[in-house]
Image 1 (cartoon, one colour):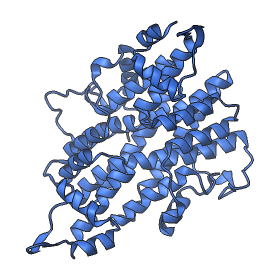
Image 2 (image 1 turned 60 degrees about the horizontal axis):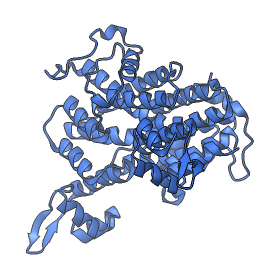
Image 3 (image 1 turned 180 degrees about the horizontal axis):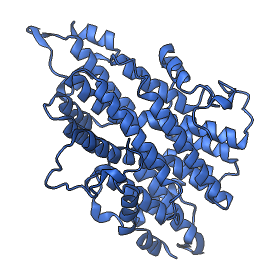
Image 4 (image 1 turned 30 degrees about the vertical axis):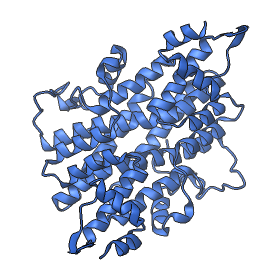
Length: 223
Length: 223
C-alpha cells in the first residue's frame, strides 16, 4: 500500500509516519517510483508496536528504537530480555544507593538468580531507600507480597513467550510484553485496589459509579 | 531551620526548593524576619515525598500537587485512593476502546467490585486492545496470572495502610504507595524475569555478572 493508505489503515498521520521513518523506528518502504514507496503488512504491524511502546509504554523515541532493534536482531531471548529491561528501567548509579536498602532488597531476592547489576534490583533498592528516608523503614510486611506476585507474573510472562511459534513473535512478546506488561499490571492493580478497598471499607458506590458486578463471593482469590 | 540548612539536609538545591514553594508543592515556612522563613521537620519530610513522586514516580509537578493536596485533605481513604489512582493513570476516553477489549477485561475482573470508569479497568482494556491490534488477541493464558497477582498486591497495599497508626501516615502510604508501588513492582518483575529466564534457559552468567545467590531450590515460589 502507499503512504496515504498506511496512514488511513493505521490511524497514524502521514507526518508522524514520516517522522518514524526518519528516526529509524519504521523501516523504509520498497521504492516503487521516483517519489513513491510501497508499504506492506509488516509496516502496519510495526506501526502498532511503535504506538504501543510510545503511547502506552511511555518510552522516548530513542528508547523505542533500541527496543525495536532488539526485535530485529539475532540475539537470544535472554539477551533480548536484558536489552528490553535496561531500556525501560531507570538508570541507577549503585553508588547512590544506601547499604541498608541494598541489603533489604537482597534479603527479599534471596535464592533468585539475579546479577548484582540487574536494573530491577537497583530500582527496587532505590524505592526502599526513599521509603526509609520518609521514615518508613519497616516494610517487611509489604515487600515480600510484591516479590511473590512479581515471580508469578514473570512465570506468566515466560509461559507466554514459550507459547509463541517463531523467533520473531517470541522476541516481539519479550519486548512488547516487558513494556506493556508494566502498564497492564499497574492498571489491574488499580482495579484490584478499588475492589479490596470497597470490600474492606464498604464504601457506598457513588451515583455515577455503580459496581459492574455485585457478588464478591465469586472473586478469584479474596480471603 | 533556615532555607540553606533545609537544602543541605535534604540534598535539594535552594533554587529547586524555591520552585516547589512557588508551585505550591511545599507549604511556606514560618516567617522569622523580613526576608527569612523557618522550616521544620515536616518540610524535610514533604521534600522527600515530592522527590519520590517526581523522580521515582515520574509524575509531573501538576500531578504531584494533586497527590499532595490529597494527603493534606480530610477525604476518606477510599476517596484518597481514587484521587491518587486518577492522578497516576493515563486518561482514557472509553469511546476509543473496542467492545472486544472491554469485554475481555470485564471477564478477567468478573466478581470484582470495580466501577465502570475505574481508570485501571480502562487502561487495562487499552493494553489488551493494542495486543489485539498486533494480531495477538488470545492472551487467555497470560492476563489471569496478572489479575491474580494484582489482587495479591492490592491486599498487601491495604494491609500496609491498615498497619499505619494515624490518618496522615495512612493517606501518605496510600498516595506514596500507589506511585512508588508501581515502580517497586516493575523493578521486582525485572529481577524475577532474570531469575526465571536464567532458570529456564540455563543462560551462562556473563563474566561481569555473577549471580548473587546460586541455589534456586530456595526460591520462594518457583514450581
